[in-house]
Image 1 (cartoon, helix red, strand yellow):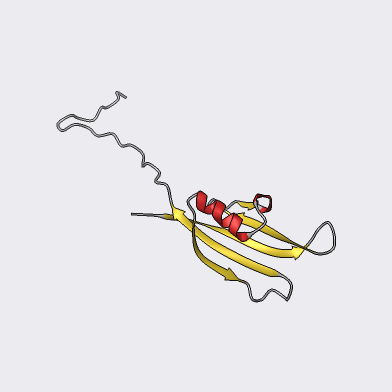
Image 2 (cartoon, one colour):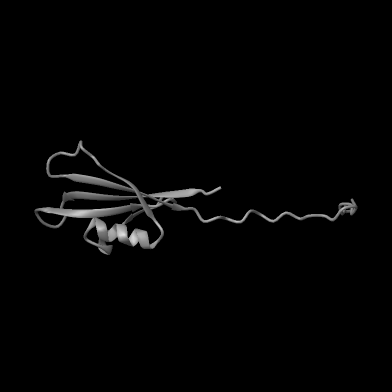
Length: 105
């Protein structure tokens, strides 16, 4: 059965921390619960989405937060990719007619 893992790319326009004006910030929320500022990897949403696509991520949906006031923007890009299969633990199989080994004690 195919299983999926999900991630979220958030694009936020916020007041700049160094001077007056605005800056665009991108944050990646990974399937492992990590939160990483990926702003240095690109200055557009397309740059970030193409980078995610190169890593096997597929865009599932996009949403914008309509409750953000006027000049603030918040966009969410929901992504998924097939989860890599983790091998199940190996089980020992005993041949037929061979009794289980017992330790003296």
